[in-house]
Length: 405
Image (cartoon, rainbow, N blue to C red; front, side, top):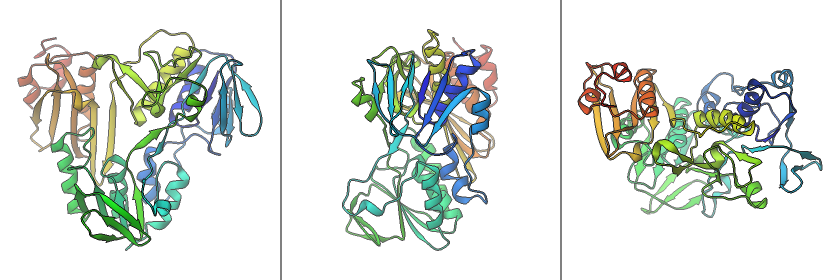
């Protein structure tokens, strides 16, 4: 068993194979010359913490103890499907019985002249380089008002920087976050002193600032772009594997070649909870879940991947959590808790719960969103009145009380 990709997804997959009882060889190949580490802290603790060392998933000793051969700092150049081999940049070739591509995604680049000096955040090295630039008083321009852009903005404020966020869409976090939830975070950034510009595009980039399509120039010492990610599919395309917004996989995470699997940020898959809608998820939880699921499939399991999508973001003292896919909902029910937190539930045409979103201080929303996640996974159709009533414990809906399914 060979796993290409030494990040969250690949490392979890390699460890899951051993946990499932596989005793044959397992090789994990990582392009970065370091042990697998967590990426979520890169936009937060790695920028503002006292010790910017990466939070490792497992070190090389743990991998060795698990009987996993770890090749670090060795890019994979090609996949030879006929020979069941992969080629490495150092000239070696590794044979495989089953192969997992967990190659992740790369930051989308700004397609503008003068963008050579723009910073992006994907690796620990990126975080260290950016940390050096986020000095007190630095003027920071953040292009993109999504998860990464706003987390970077909050971290830059914590470092004492002056921050401007430029988002071409009419509002922040427009792809996956309900408008009211995004508004809470937008207000928090404004109160922190961030200059939030929505509905504004870039006309160009200068060494000293951002040229906006309004004709204004925003002076910047540092420009960071967080405008989405592009799935890493070069190996797959070169090998002739099907690609559709990432490597196209089936319900078991197998590609168009039954001996090659894909998981994590790099693949699109049909989700059974959403009528087999093909989606691609860029999240820490999905990388974990799909890594483990792909390992089981590679060992012969015949189970569709059906984990409920879940994502979170920490900005200042606030935590955003989302379970399910809010954009799949056709109606919304709001639970207004006594503490002022609003849990927004998204329902389908049949009344089935499809998503829940909330933002609050610390772990204030974690329990409610977790219960909602379980309800989504069970295809529950809770009574809207019960969802809206803060006096009705959400856990009671798991037991069927107030639930029509």
